[in-house]
Amino acid sequence: MIKHLVLMLALSGSAATAQTRPQPGPRPAPAKERIESAKIGFITRELNLTPEEAKAFWPIYNAMEADLKKANRDPLREGLKTVRGEGGIDNLSDAQARELLAELDKVGAEREAVRRKYQKEFLKILPPQKVLKLHVAERKFRQEVMERLKDARRGDQPGPRPGGRE
Image (cartoon, rainbow, N blue to C red; front, top):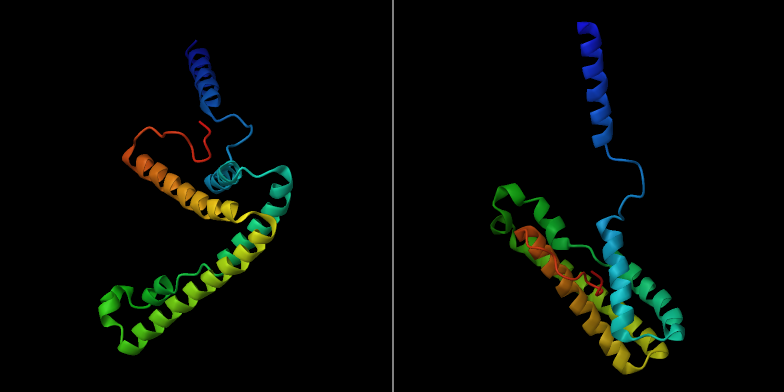
């Protein structure tokens, strides 16, 4: 009798455990993919791109993003890794500090060169007003994402997602 009771408890316990396990199925997209998707929708709406404009715009925009990613290194972070535990910036020699400053200037110039190059490309396919709207839309999107991150850290209920969807 006790064996049957123990067996029934064990079976009911394993059934309860099986029910609490996550069921296989579609997983939500990673945050990076969701943000990129929201950004595409946001920019498309803000620029009010026609289908023809969108067809020409997105390959150029994606190429710009790829080039910016290549130029998006942080020499300050890399340079300070070597002195982090030893007093940080105060322990850099003048020569090391100048080298880091020069590298920061170089990276900034690379990013600016990419932006200038692609601005010329955008102007070939879009009116200047839409190219300006692109700059505004990117800034606005970044601000909205930062606000949502701040809200999430504080535990606030999130508002509308960047891109205008709930």
